[in-house]
Length: 117
Length: 394
Ligand code: SF4
Ligand code: SF4
Image (tube, rainbow over all chains, first blue to last red; front, side, top):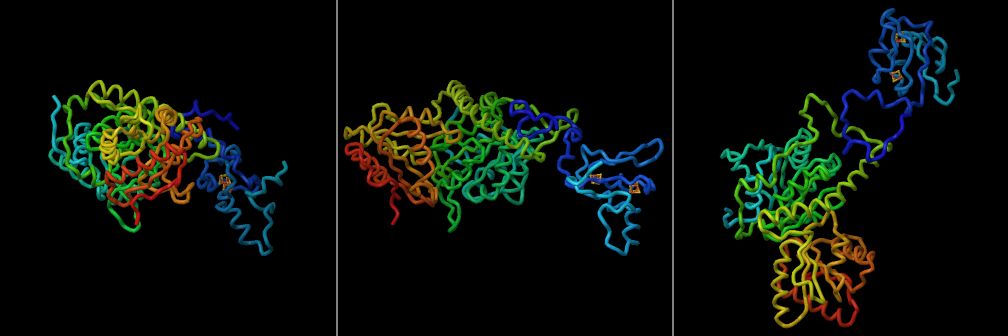
């Protein structure tokens, strides 16, 4: 987390004087769920990249691959997991109730507190 | 050369607006403010000003348009009254906290309900914690003079806060008076050109106004507003000094009237102060040592100076044209704040509050005289019989 400034050192009225500095706001601190990438399942369709509201899907443009998440900014909203077509297929096929950490899912949303690498 | 004109208070304010020639005016008609903006609209139609006049569908939109225009870097003005101000509410706070130096002509009128279009101060007292600077005016001349000063106060780089200039609905807003109108060029020179430090229209330096502001910085921005209010206390006096020099006037934080050697005084704002002066003169002829203090600056509240100016008295009465329902003694806001100001500075004297004139109820010299006579008795006995009196209520 960036050091918080005092009232003398910030623009008045909540004004933001610099363009495009939203990246300096670490929205990752808001996260209650963390997306976990199942690389083996990924078909690199970039649906998650397209829909992520926080530009937090990391891609390798040269090899046209989805590679992971920018966890500094990912808020854990789960949109990526819900738009992922691999997940959609798994969920459709699954007749038993799907566990949150089902290994067949391409993006799993794991409770932040329970996350262990 | 200045000239004297016969003008209603609202026309005097509209004249100041013409001379100031703001970039944008957004307003919605409401009694008794309407003739301010109506007169100004004529100036726009006649090409006497360069103002972009935004006709809106409500006061909420009027204040929103003002905030937008101010953020864009414009010099902005508006006018309203009572329920119009109440409808602006949400944006009134946003204007102050977004640090928009908007100037508002506020023609004081009773807030509904029951519906009433006549004068009292319930409208302005509702905005006292909103972060606006608030100035009172006894008559059309003061409303005119205060409006001109308000522009310089609001736009001062150490302040950047909106200013409301009050006058009493109908009593002065529609009362024809002799008003000294200064040369257009002199008024324009006094207010100067507005050079905003930040402007949304400055495309070279894109910026954001009014973003989300959570627990990590909102508090700091409130602290900045406190700082601006503290600066305003000084800037209001500096601007008054410059104004007094230029236009030969005598403005300060408040006006003392025969107060110096008085033993008893009344504190009353806006038009009733004029009536009270007549009463003071009459009682002085009887040899009674009475005086008056007429607040001009209500926000920021000049507590220290007020305490100093009143410290020598034996008793003081405040006259409030509104009630702070449920507050201590169901008193008026001016009384409560002044009582606190004196008490905290160790100035101890019997004090009483006289609520008067709600919903435009007439306030007569003999009623003001009864307040002075009450206080003269209190000065002798040292005892206040009743903390709050609702004057002339049946
Ligand atoms: S959880 Fe939400 S914010 Fe995080 S990567 Fe997925 S879509 Fe983006
Ligand atoms: S949506 Fe799913 S399959 Fe498509 S790139 Fe993202 S993670 Fe891979």
